[in-house]
Length: 365
Image (cartoon, rainbow, N blue to C red):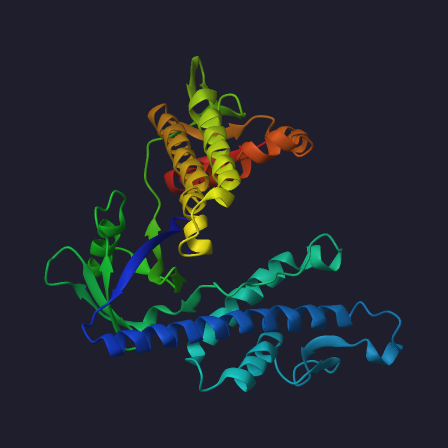
């Protein structure tokens, strides 16, 4: 990926393209078995990589034991019989060969090795704990595993084979750009990179990673936008003499607190609910609020960040500064209420993503 392109990840629901219930059941059992293997493999990878790095830190061993983590065939001080990436692959090959396509294991191994190397300094300094992967880990795969991608008969969905399993998409009322990205993929205007499958509540989702070119806008390098993020007004933006507020305390914070209060009431009242079908019946009202706050917050943050970047593009600002953000985050960490209800990290992450897509430089003070 070069500087003019970026990766767009889209979550698309998949349906197994078959009417055979026995076949569908077998596919689900296979995918859940692969997911469990990926869960075990991911923890194997991080455990082995961490132990290998710690060997160099065991200063209490004899000097001749402290050698280099390298291939002994390429470095005389090396203690490995292959590359460091190859060591974890060989461990996984020993445990899982024949139970899962090995290119899934290869994709997982390369991805997690990259994550480990990016975070290695924090592990060695004791500032971070080693990642611990859960059973709902996505199943990674390579682009070449998708074959026969084409438009479905209804001309609204797309179908393809993945590991020889037939799927078709379910885009529904697509309010974003998923259908457009698939159309451009068929025309060769965008590329599909290594992606993954996610299993959630009996449904299958494709986490598709598209490599596309960044948007082209006529921006002026001399124009700088300043944005203040706070819990009172999610965003206050200044561009020269222009000033605007995006969102409000009543819209964001009060609505969020109302959802929290409703969930708290449902939790207190659950003990009085009729228990005809046991736990599920009692917690039915509580389950209604389980993801409501998260979904509301994510939707509002997407709207706020989109409005901010649109204003920057409208006023041709080539740079965007988040004023005093580092200091605000440090202060918020010490206040439980602000830390719980001000989603500064998620908002900053979405602004970064959209600014990068629009070709705007983001600076955090």
